[in-house]
Image (tube, rainbow, N blue to C red; front, side, top):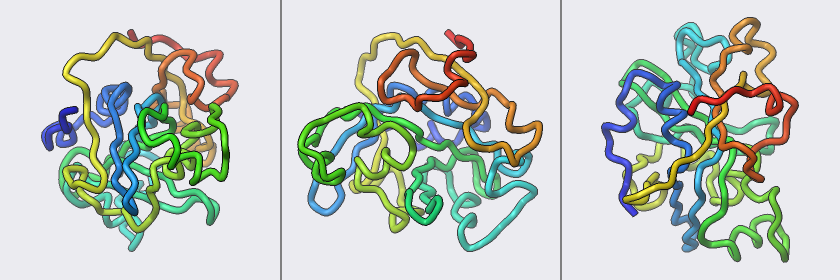
Length: 208
């Protein structure tokens, strides 16, 4: 599997990057365990101009400062004090665009993933939803700022990939963002079991 090049993350269209990440793979080597997941759901966050972004209106805090760093690093934050949410920082320094990874299909390391969920048998909840993405892959807030060219966490693609049917909808759980909550910044693979179950799925539109 080939690593995504650094230039993949340096583009100025975070929406396109969110779409392009579908079908790519997240590879982790955490605490001696190797796991791989295929990305099936993403959400784009357009930094300074996006009311749903943590960095909206150039907000720089201890937590968000990593978003203003070099593209191609991870931004991991804690949601509700429980869930570790994994984001990919994009664009260029001082432009804090990011893509949230909302769903993965487990590919390698299933035994370790089951152990992390304290389960004996696999089911579609493993990797469905952003908190479960990080849980399956062993990602936590200690990985914020890690380069996606590192051995610990990296994103890759196969040399050949089959075509996939992509749908788009408004993002989930960002009602606080007023009219920005209606932006069609969420992308997912049609009918995939690891995609978040939500009413918006029924009104999503095709991008392919």
